[in-house]
Length: 99
Length: 500
Image (cartoon, rainbow over all chains, first blue to last red; front, side, top):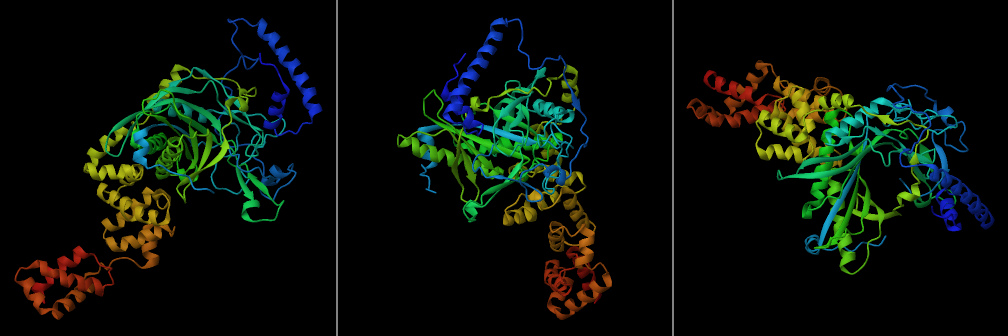
């Protein structure tokens, strides 16, 4: 289990576009370490014959038919936006990071 | 922007071996999105195809589109893949406003299809087998329009406008294994591969696969290694390649660019590069993030997909004929020469020609229109021929020729009208007054005039020298303003030569 360092926290904050002060980084480093160690405790209990699970309920193939429903109007879609131009959301430009 | 140094292509291949890998994204043409019941549409007004799921609104939850799963399985089977008995979705976390949730739902370690291979045919008929690593399901992202900054707006006015209509549209991403041994044909193999995939998804009816609309997108990975080396070189991934021709050019460019760096002892930066159609060059984008940085984890809002053997076999039975087999069959049925047929394939117009023939046109006529006037116009306008007219329209156009309503020359003007969206061939003929003169009385009057004004020609025709009729036909066509059926005029000229 990798240790959580201040570098790890800085890196994660950068990926999440969150600005942290040195104090916050120090605090979060301690908190995240505690969480990781708690998870590590679960790993010690797990044995090879227990498969990893992503969901607590044993269900599969929950899907829907290909039918249009639940549409919002443009006005509704933009209603909660901090800023828009009447048809599109307006956000701070972050150039060159298309995925 | 500094211009990249390029090494001569042949020289580059003398020193280095190119290894390519391709990632192709296919937008599925389902009625709704991958995880929401918003309509899956193209080109509508911004933010009109939206549900709360598309915006990642609190409390909204994704639900898988069953049809998209079936499409993905069909595609996987057509690529010779195994279909996973169970597979899961995963979150790919990144913070960028093209998706409102701050993550993309994708598949990571459990793709729905894996371990396939695809035979692709090159221009000269050689077959190359491309190994497929996986095909996985995911959702498309929204569209950003950047305003200000480089467009010359005042400082501080930079912002982006976001349209989420495309966010959540079902995608299948097909990833190849490294493709070795392509050598000087690296670009051609890539183009043929993408073209084959386009044929397959169209035959399956699961995507429009129009590159200019972004229904089908290709990212090209290129790396070079010294001849004889085991280890793969550092690769770059070129994005924004929006036509079959660009794929070939972009790969060739990257080979030459990387070779120039490596030959001088430099190192290649692992990065995303953007292809620029206008200049035929690539420029660096963001440094490639490690998969670790995306912090993939199983999507907790969705349950696993289990695919039974019965479903797989049901869908396998519905698969269309593989493109290579279909080509052999069509070539025989149409009676084309190797050269004519290969030209259609290379132009990427096989589907268009086939659909035109299915719509009623004779094979040679279908070939002539698509490879001739339509392609020529498309080249002039820098667009794909399929964006100009539909196969049904071309068949319609040919039918008015076959019925003798217009001749070949007038038909070209009808085609111009069809491409301009002026209605059906008959409507255009009516509106533009293009029909040939089918009234023999008018033709005979013009023929008699022409014959009598050229007595020497008339004499020759009477003596049985029918090739002399050409001069009269020309004069009649001119008199009729080109609106006559030349074959009919010819018949009448011979007839009238004996009568006048």
